[in-house]
Length: 288
Length: 332
Ligand code: SF4
Image 1 (cartoon, rainbow over the protein chains, first blue to last red):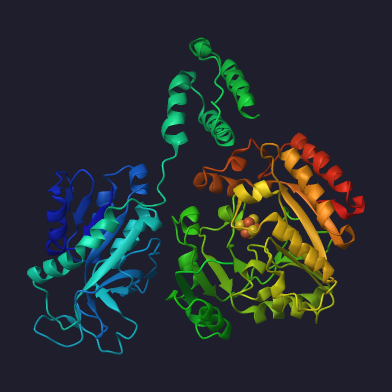
Image 2 (cartoon, each protein chain N blue to C red):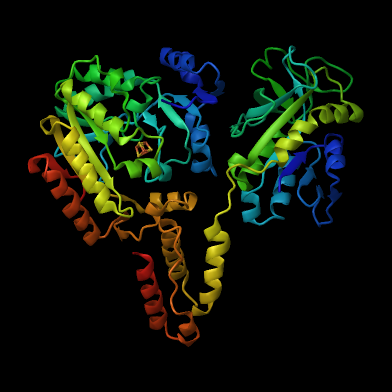
């Protein structure tokens, strides 16, 4: 199941409507929406809020689920590039946290219909190139020389997500909402900007991760065998070694049934040495 | 042949390096990402080597220290007093299931160090102090396979021609000999090819050249007057392995001029236990890695009996065609 993080409701709203996701009732602080096949999370503004939202969400899921989950942050960003238009979408391959100077590198693993990529700088406050009544932090052209896109959540999202999710599963994409003129975007404008790029992104987001494949040994063969021999009360090491030997046989002779010992005697095996002999004999059959 | 790289990370200090520019010119469509230090990307936590291997990225960097490492216990030292290796590149464009790099590096991305001149200087210093050096050049990579965009092998061969006390071993599976064919053969340089039965190449050494192509390349290299070492290493106990390795020995005997071979080295699979753990965690589809290995001093290998059997099968098969003095066991 993929998950998608937004900072504010206006960014998330078109996605919530499209997916018909409903709020999840849980004891946490952040808003989580869900349907049968997706999660949408709204963190609130700022990198700290975003990092906490990622962490809270991650704790609701078992690791096995997180390992298979696509985890994205989408949202609007200001652009320092005058030639880039409002509404253009970029994938992010480098994030700089302005306050700490730390760099992060989300790695692009899959192809997208949106070919453009750039770097993102996450600031702690809204920033602008000129002074306005909104009291944004003002930076000069020289200060912003290496800056391409600007937001307030990216570094928090990536730093937190990389603690809980495999790096390859994490993506950040931003759509340009302004050119740092120092004005807040109206929610309707944000909604419309987000809606314009949603369809192709929705397809890519819901497409399963190409590298998450079922391992029939793990999901079927081993659980079935384990059910039969659980009573033996193997030590963790014995269990691990037996599983390895079974996998060895399974991989080496994919078209042959895995040799099984006489399972009828399992309930009669009591002593540790009997268990050991039973397992060793079985492993011998597997190591041919 | 090499895959094109979708992204190239470039350390800021080498952004203007002429070699960086040369490499970048070979990949005009790659997205360039400036980076402070290659480790910021390469050493990140929770990367998955297997996933990255499907779309590896290039990293251009500067090596700042450790221009020579003492040779590892897993590699034969060929009786040299000063057996060292260097790392001009980290990772490989091929994808062999038994490759220890999968367990050693956190990332599958390919790091290329562009400041070769610093490697040369340090190597020269070592030679001045110690008098001789046996240097394995293609250690954590397959250098010749990168030659079309990272022509380090050529430069090192040229460097070695000015350093008579330097012996180089360049180990490869690549058939890219033509890129160095114009150079004068040097008796202090050993070009070593790792070869395997075709079935191993097809099913385990993903992306590598065929056995025939490797043999043809070796033959050309011999004819050009170079020293050639043939490494049947690792020997893998795949189903019907005896048949496959005996046939390999037959093919080598028929198709290579035995006089041209400096040495044949034979060794069974072995690996650092921690690396194997790392690899089997991510690569759960490779039967050779799940073999019930023997563990000793943090090394996993085939059991003593299995190793003896390998030697007893492979060595006599080779002895039918090659002089026993040419055959060496690379392990134990
Ligand atoms: S050719 Fe060598 S370095 Fe490259 S993947 Fe194979 S074993 Fe590893």
